[in-house]
Amino acid sequence: MEVAANCSLRVKRPLLDPRFEGYKLSLEPLPCYQLELDAAVAEVKLRDDQYTLEHMHAFGMYNYLHCDSWYQDSVYYIDNLGRVMNLTVMLDTALGKPREVFRLPTDLTAYDNRLCASIHFTSSTWVTLSDGTGRLYLIGTGERGNSASEKWEIMFNEELGNPFIIIHSISLLNAEEHSVTTLLLRIEKEELDMKGSGFYVSLEWVTISKKNKDDNKYEIIKRDILRGKSVPHYAAIEPDGKGLMIVSYKSFTFVHVGQDLKENQNENMSKKIKEPLYYWQQTEDDLTVTIRLPEGISKEDIQVQFLPDHINIVLKGQRFLEGKLYSSVDQESSTWIIKENNSLEIFLIKKNEGLTWPELVVGDKQGEFIRDSAQCAAIAERLMHLTSEELNPNPDKEKPPCNAQELEECDIFFEESSSLCRFDGSTLKTTHVVNLGSNQYLFSVIVDPKEMPCFCLRHDVDALLWQPHSSKQDDMWEHIATFNALGYVQASKRDKKFFACAPNYSYAALCECLRRVFIYRQPAPMSTVLYNRKEGRQVGQVAKQQVASLETNDPILGFQATNERLFVLTTKNLFLIKVNTDN
Image (cartoon, rainbow, N blue to C red):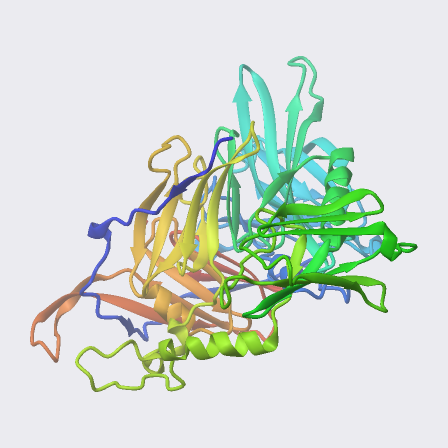
């Protein structure tokens, strides 16, 4: 059995700036343009039965504005009339109205249990689209930047079960056979799991292919499902379609589709429900084993044989428990009785008094050890010298420990640790694992549409951008850019909703749920002479922070960044913020 390789992310030191002095607030006005929408955005609010944190992450915080990374400054949204609307910006001062490029065939208002409609730009001429009711559309668009050749035409549509949203998709052309592979996310009710929220996250990996060169008919040729207990921060298919990468708090595993899935669930359920064969307790001198007897068992049906380091229990002629004991017992003093509650109690006297047994029978996992509260108190007392009730009992000594009172709230990470996993598409096994530890996931961005999306992680106070390269087995993730101190700065923004950066890394931006947008630029040379007050040295570069406030009280539903502009979508308006003037 192959074991997944444990990998690590290699930081490029030249891309870090240890002398970074922070962001300087700039009051320079940012040009902001506002477009009123013909119809409101097709927002779908969470239902009463979508109450978990996973529902909020996947659907409540959904980004309703979609950026076409194949064409510069082109964004899309879907309105409540079922229209896919596009705005392509050529000149800020001559903005046109968003134009309709496609209309969904289904009446979305007729469905009570639908999710938000989702869209992904698979290639420069293909789009995958979901209407939120469980139907997947594959659409040929022609060249979307060219009005003469652009025509949105449905090439495939099929009902795929419960509603889903599209996470990622790619277009593949092998030996003149065209196929599209896409990743769909659902949150489904867990019928068998007794613990947790009662829901699980399903990622379905669907491949749609054109079988015949002469025929334009597309059909599904492969469906694989991964299951996990948390919504992934990041999930993307490799450009060659041979693998999948996922960043998530809880791990994902492939499951068999159909009958095999039900069999696996039944097996797992039987394991969970199965009671322990016996319960046992211990003191420093003895052990007590309790066995629940089946109905109709009498004293004559029970045989218990004690040996110095062995025990054998037979019930009604059937061997119940036999094996080597962890340590020696006094067989003459050991005994057993039947209690009034129809249970068998066996008393074993330890030969080595004071020895704690980690198990009763060597290698046997069928029993459950019950720890006595007095034992727990004694163990805690023995470990008391390793702990202290005071946070920092002696801060004045030569090398004081870390004082948690000096930490700010934005320095404290959640206890959960995310992981980055790479799955092989043919074996459906995990091949590479990176434990991200306290490297908090921040956002993803498409730098090159022909490559996988990049993801941004917090490293100490900085935010580092990573580009996956599936072809490089030894160095799959490349550190390509750094946003200085952004990891620290963003943690203080308690109301942040969306996070993004320019594909050329010139700035990063985040928006709150209402009105405010924060922009953090990379350090740039100053036109005037500036000196550091403390050190007296001349400062060559300054990183600017800018704040834009939108003239609306509607909640922000979508947020996208290009090299020159920020696009912000609210229920009834689309805002453009001109960030960079240089091409």
